Length: 515
Image (cartoon, rainbow, N blue to C red; front, side, top):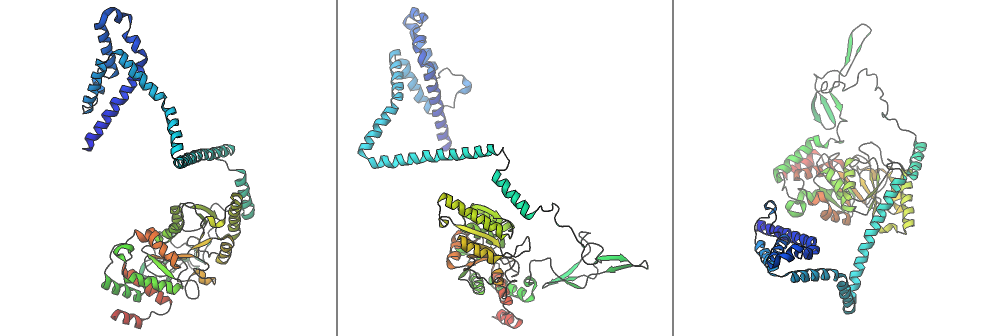
């Protein structure tokens, strides 16, 4: 049915276009063609033949076979039109063409008359329609004007060259901070070792097992250094039986703790692997609510929301609160998950130098100056500062006290990714906020972190007030469209929090397992 309809539409358009093309093309030569000297001497029969040839050309009766469209129901319609034109005399054809062109030329005046009558009968309708038309014209002209300004500025700058203002800023940065080495910091030797550990990639160290934060080295591992003694003998240094594991993000060793392992096994026996459904549909069970309540109580916030993936928690949190037209001021040293959330938010983004409070103030003052020039209030646009507490790629702590002071001075909100510090920094393991004597919800409106580091589980969480948490249950992409976290991972997170608080011991664990 659809194919036949499409074929009919094609045929209708084909015949209509070709007919109008020939009507316009040959309308001016109708009289010359029919009333030529030859036709006037040949009598009526010759006139009929000439007229027949003209109509055939007008209605494409003699067009080449190669361009014939497939036969459809519209051929009968045009056959009847052809017959009508053939039976009509020349005067009728000329009158029809003249009427057609007269009607075409009278359309502007007819529209004007209609518009004036409409203005008298329904002025409100005309006002609304005119306002919309004027707004469309202004938007088109303004956009072209903006594009023209951009092209003109690009030409003034010489194509891809920098503007004078950008040159001044770069020169100021170079004078203030100097030139950074292209090859990075020079390598230095560690201790008295004569050979680098790991020079022979893939050989040497054999890890026997991992328990807690220690690696147990197999006795057959190769020595990590060797040197020639004065007597000509080779003296080698072997690894000890166990070493501290710095090659992991599980800083507290929760993922390899026997108590945590038993907690996971008990939960797996009780719940299975999970519902594999989203939280908002049928994926929420008591284990998810338990870890949210436990974490909000541990961090002293009004609520917490659980994501099934650590990176998705950070990414979805940023994209849930920042939208197109908002402003994000971001530290240039943030990790990939935050950068992905910033990109997905489609907000306006400005970057400041890593952990540079002076550069952050300069950027905030620049935004304030633009507000004054545009006569815009700071509250007319949602604005966020995006930083990490402990930077994953740098290993540096953010100067949170200074950042919070600037946030309050310039009326911004703070999004803090505390994945690396949560569970390790602070007197009670509550992260960088506690380390600096600050509090969530008060000094940082949105705190997000991963459970895949110190908590030894999988997933991520965001904590804050009830408004922050409830908003993500409808706007957090990683929460709405991902399968819920397996229950045994939630139980592992709860057990890790209790272990950090000193409430998890073998006796309590045995009682919980029996229950």
